[in-house]
Image (tube, rainbow, N blue to C red):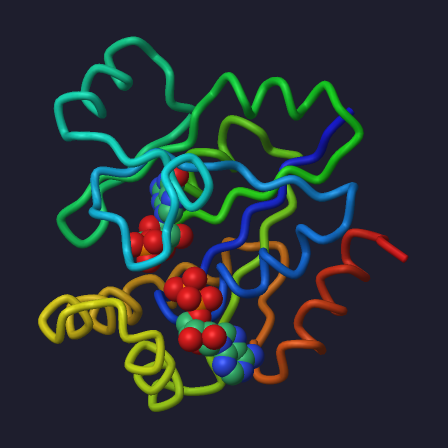
Length: 181
Ligand code: ADP
Ligand code: 5GP
């Protein structure tokens, strides 16, 4: 029986980086979300995300193909339900790297979900990490930092909050939570 693990946190807190390291474990699988946002440099369709148009996304909602979805920063993001249900039949930790709005929907539908909120060491570091990633326009970055304040208000809804200061420590802490040796 698979277990759902949600990883949320402000943009730039390190979710993608942490998930990539966790995924090295054969017991860990990551959900590939659907989004209407444009691919960043190096992001491959079907790996980073399934990139779709707004019309296709709305069709997926209408057909009940998403376990949850949310609007973030002017784009839509959602979790494909078929892959999630399939993962629940396997002996894996199925990671959903999703925002707070989506996380609340999943927690309600699947109360046994393990939920982890990643925090940046401080706001200045968060800003630096977003600049370092260099994937967002300045305007988009300001909006992401503004959304971060709202997202932080929801951290108490999660089973665990981890400050992502040292990457190795963060990954090892999550591996311990999941009982991965
Ligand atoms: P998110 O997926 O939460 O938006 P990313 O994983 O893309 O964040 O990380 C944002 C930037 O911060 C990337 O350039 C990444 O390499 C860097 N980063 C992530 N975790 C750490 C860490 N613990 N220490 C220093 N830099 C980090
Ligand atoms: P980004 O554009 O930086 O890849 O992601 C923006 C935000 O959308 C992040 O908080 C990320 O966790 C969230 N996100 C990614 N996929 C999904 C999803 O399937 N559902 C929801 N609700 N949020 C998602």
